[in-house]
Length: 285
Image (cartoon, rainbow, N blue to C red):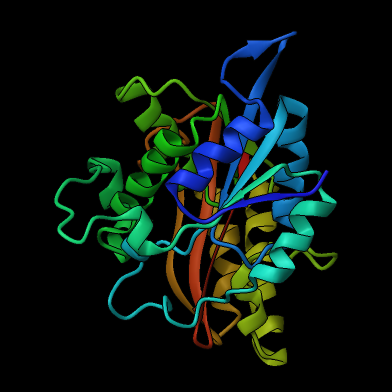
């Protein structure tokens, strides 16, 4: 089946009719699953599309570089835009619908109302990128309202984003089931990211210290040991400019105490050269 491309709201409504996706559960599976992306698709996105196909009869992918989640000194203008290649990826993965609106289609020129990420939006990514998570939640809620999926699939590499979306869905009674897909890594451990293409050879070698730090921490069993083991790896790589290394509760992203038991997320964010990367692993205490 050819991929239907919708560039605006009217085309999206027609595409939903063409797919025959009316919403709801039929025969034990959902009718429509959405994979929100900013394009520059890679194997990690492919894995989410495959997971979405397991969840629903039809899969939609959004391709939209959201200006609301970029700060004034971030890489919005140079964020990779590879729509023709992205469309080929979607076709190969059996996606039925690609929604690729412009910013003018998504946002009114005098837009005033958005979604607040609350307290969780002020820690970790929120502390280093003020307003970022507000922008993420605002665009995700708009995509939910426009595409009207039954299921939405996100990658666990953006762990705080996934936690925030789940909280938004719960707090605002959004009728979408949120599914998290595992982080996909290159053979050397580097988490796949659309920004990896910015890394020079030396930068890429330095960037491997992020996943090495996480894996070293994950081998330990107490919060103090986990933090110490991960920090030692990062301290040995001077080319990495660390934003944060945190061990947090998966639901709140608050730092866990020494008496925490159960799951926690060990997360890192750093700049390597001019490229900012994030990564995380789940550990059990």
